[in-house]
Structure formats: C-alpha cells, structure tokens
Length: 539
Image 1 (cartoon, rainbow, N blue to C red):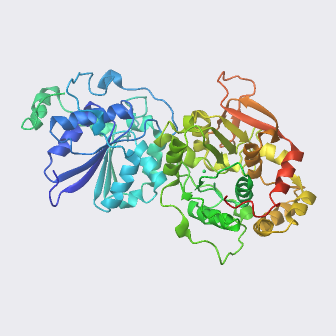
Image 2 (tube, rainbow, N blue to C red):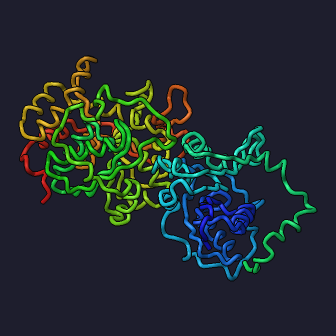
Image 3 (cartoon, rainbow, N blue to C red):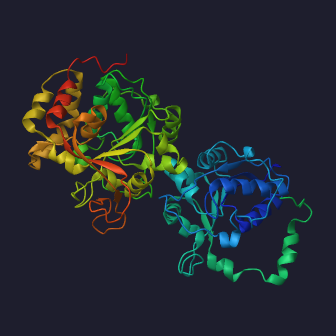
C-alpha cells in the first residue's frame, strides 16, 4: 500500500515470464508505489496479458493495483511471430491456475487513456517502466504530445546497441514487434529515457547455479497459487452536409493537416457559425501524424490559418470546443450509433487509425466510411506520386485501408481533377448572394488567386466530391471494387495509393474507388447549396 515519500511507478507490460519477476521486484520495494499496470500485446494478446498480471498480483495479495488493457495490435497493425516457444501459449509457461482472479477486476478505462490521466495527476513524479512493445506509449504521445514532459523518467527494456537480435538476426523482440512505436517513443517522448538493451541482458544473465537462490527473493510473501483538417474545401463540404435535410451531423472531429488541430477546431466553429449550427459538437484530435513525421503544409493554397487568412473579429470562442479527445469521441459515437453511423474523412486519417488501435471493433460498427484521399493512377498533388491527405500520414492511410473492416468509398485526387468545375461555373455559383456565398468567396480568394497564377483551367474543390457521394449515391457514375494499399517505403512514392488493378496480390477488395462523377448532378448539388438560405439550421 502507498505510504508518504514513495516513488510513483507505472508499469507497461506484455506479461511474459520475465515481466512477472520484474513486477514482483517492483512490488517488493518499500519506497515504490506501483499506481497501475498497463497491458499491451506482445508475448500474448492484451487481454491475456491482463489476466497474467492479475495472477502475478494475486500471489502477493496486491489485487488493489489497477490493471488496464491497452493496444492489441502494433501501431501499423502488422502481425509478428510470437514467443510462445519460450513463454508458453498463455505467456506464463502454460501452468494452469484454477483459482486465477476473475478478469472483471480489470479496469474499463483503456490503458492509453489511463497513462495520459495518471501522467497529469502525478506530473513530474511519475516514472514509467516499459517491459513490452511500446505501442501504448506511442499511442499516448499521439493523443497527447505533452505526455513525455510530464514524466519524471522512462525506463525501457528493449532494442540492442551492438546489432545482436533475439527474434531476428538484428532485432530485439520488443522493438521488432512494433518498430514504428519504438521509433516514435525514442524520437519524440521528450522525457529522460534509460534503456537496457538485449546485449546488456545477455552479458549480465544469471548462472543456472544461482537461479534457486534468486527465486527465494520473495519467499516471505509467496502464497503459491496460480475526422477534418478544415481547409477551404473542407468548409464547403461541411456546409453541403449541413444543407441536407435527411442528414444529422452528430459531430465534427479535427486533425492536423492543412493546419494544426486546434486551428482546425477554430475554423470549424467559424464554418458552423455562418449557418447558426454551433450546437454541433467539435472535438480536437491528433496534432501529429501516426509516426510524428513533419510534412510540408499547404498554406500557399489554404492560407496560414487554413481559411484563406481572412480575419474574423466575431469568430466563436474556442471554449465551445469539447474537452473529449476526437479519437475517444469517435469510438464512443460508433458504439452509440452502432450500424447507423457513416464517417466522412476529408483529411489525413490519423484519428481513424488511432481509433482502430484503441478499439479494433471500431470499423465493424460503422455503416460506411467515405474518404477523400489517395490516387488511383499515381498522380500526386503534393509530391510527384502522392495526394496530400495520404502523404501527410501514409502509415495512418495504410492502417485504415487494410484494417478498418468497414465498407470504404474513396474519391481520389485524379477523380477530383477530372470533374473540377470551369471558372465560369465557379463564378456563377459565387454570385448567388447570401451569407454562405459571401463566406466561401472570402476564404477561397487566396486559393483562386494561386490557381489562376498557376494557370489552372478549372476550380478544384476536392472534398465536396466525397460529401456528394455520401449525400447522393447516384452522383457516382462509375466505380471499381479493388484492393488498395499505401506505399510506405518508396523514395519517390511514399504516400501513393497502390491499386491492384491486375489482382496480382490475390487479395479481396477492400475499397470502392469512384472513377466517374455525374457532372450535371454534382453541379446541381453545388447550386442547391445557395438556395433557401435558412435550411442549414437545425429543425
């Protein structure tokens, strides 16, 4: 039990045999207060880890310590070889325990959320010991970049410093199981980190003759029983959704892309204010890509604020933004509206990928997922081969396309280009009058000036195409069901959506790619946006 002056410790574990002894050593120390144990997939799945931790705690009558279940897959969802040949299929040597504690003792709060909460509660006091793949920690950083600076210290068992591996020729198990998470933590945690590598463990391993002596360490206690980035085009897409009488926009989640996530939230509030819909909840999500890589912004097109750098002295106060993180809101709403909720993604897919890591059941609860992003002929708009949303966070796009397990419809960059509207049509639309027209004209001014300077022959507003497909499925003239993934390693092609047109990979279709739009119907929908000016209001 906790006493005054004890050091606060949180343990992140995948609860194999060696983790069990490490946990018991921490509990033995009189000057350490173990405030919780977070579980992550590694030696076994995350729930089995939780059960194993309960067994360990029961041995020393410490079931008062909270146990939290975390991520059950690596950051990118890649499956890796287990170590059941060493730890057993259950992670604790396959030793039956008829009196094992009931899993109802496990906390309902997700391990990642618990990690963030406890780091705030014990700011500057909490040490984190990581005995497992670093998925929970990387996820915590993506949800809250301030996590690391709040920690007193982070201790990691993992990696190698002489290139000697224990699971491959060159990799240690914890880092190999989720290398992207390890990359994120080492490069972005911004907390003091101490690592004990695999080589150090090998060089200081215990002779067999001493094993029994060390096993008596605990003899006095042992009782042995066993998703928007709110740029200019996003604004028009949101307004189109709000215009539709048969659509209930239950929330808008914000993610970094054109601008940082908080600025996205402020932009969304400005859009909602134009049509008197500030009743719609707005949630701030991830402010960095899944791996934390920084990418070039598009301020030359959308402006440094994402809405054309048009001042708004009467902008809504940011206090209207919800305190709940966008990823948690997405998960909660998918449960509340199971089988009814459609998700329209106008931005990098970081929030959605994070939701999948926190709750793999997210996708099957969605009715449909509509994505503006990627490309199906290899034409890029931010690099030679990549579209902006997928390029900004290619790992997130990879996760969503391969693992969402929900119907996905994608409108790619090429489809947007092929169905962009002539300038004459654009200016006719903006001459309709009214608050919406005035607002869009003002925020699009910088984009139009850039486009005309580049001698674009048409006006391209990409996000309105995917929202149109959601609102009116008959706007889709032709489409293809295909398998598509995302290139992660290409020197020139990182972020490109790779479509298996020839079925060479022999994988089932995972997306529907819209290739042709009914232009007349689409332009009619644009005109409808400016009719009956009060119909954006909630009824």
